[in-house]
Length: 108
Image 1 (cartoon, rainbow, N blue to C red):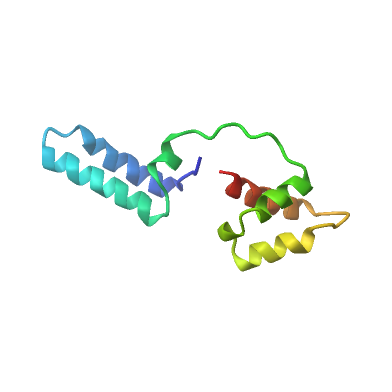
Image 2 (cartoon, rainbow, N blue to C red; image 1 turned 90 degrees about the vertical axis):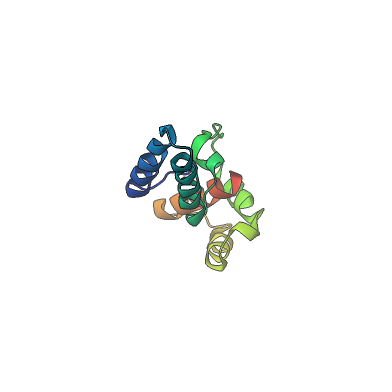
């Protein structure tokens, strides 16, 4: 599930509050505004509403393989980062967290 920042979530909640309007046009306009808000942020309703299924934790090598399996979802820097840490004996906590975030993103 993709989290919205606090400000965007508040705006979406206010817009969705208009779904109960007695006026057809106001409901339609609110639905269009809510949809536009999500699309502008590269999100879909499914990403916002459906909770993610729990994923089993991955080893570092599994995370690297998962992330590299979808290079179309990675920036050039992200792909270079992953290839650069492959095979290292030791990763910093920051590197592991970045790798986990990338692996999670491509697994969704």
